[in-house]
Image (cartoon, helix red, strand yellow):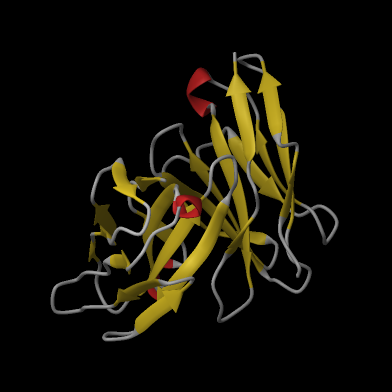
Length: 112
Length: 113
């Protein structure tokens, strides 16, 4: 069964450093999403991406964040200058109309 | 804006007990409703869904009915197992809102043998 994969599973970084979280969506899916879950809190929407552009973003997704689909298979989330409060589990999801979103296993980001 | 409220946990049960997790929502229009489950150390898995009023979603012994009159989508299972120990998230999706999912806060369920 096809699945969404994410790498790395755990990323530790120093405050102020750039990180790139990688996702490989399911191959025939066209809609891509990033969500995050701060430890013990609810899952929050960050951004959706379709047709090589952002379709919607939340207020969390500020100028420090960017997304890219560089090569037709990967979907990346970049945080330019990480802050302590960026520590969270980041989930990628993909979707093919009209079905539900499939989530990856997540990347745990720890900012020290 | 859209929101989902679900009962806070943790909910601790004995094996074979009946489980109910309440979920209510606020949204304009006609959202689709979902329950996702997160097992320890894993990501989110879709458990069940309902796309219109009075639909019943079911999977693995879990059920939830889309009640528009009470804006609710309560999750139930008649006889839980230890393997059902997880965090359960209620969520909604509106097509007019870009199809993003709006999640509730999650309910941790612990089933003891």
